[in-house]
Image 1 (tube, helix red, strand yellow):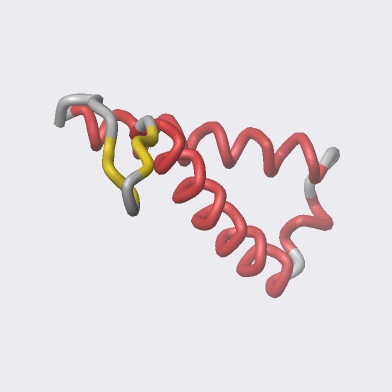
Image 2 (cartoon, rainbow, N blue to C red; image 1 turned 180 degrees about the vertical axis):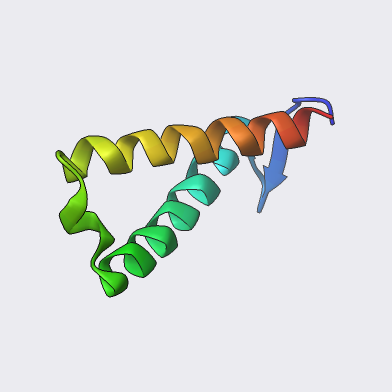
Length: 67
């Protein structure tokens, strides 16, 4: 995939912005699963942990999209 602008209803957006939003949605879904099972209570700093999960999801999606 080439990282060129994507036309969304006449507005050109960077592909990274679409990856950012998609990674955020995936992270929200993962957080709901983690909250449901109570695993977030076992983490020292939940906000920092979720930030790390977001960065991992975003990096993974970027690497997959770059192939």
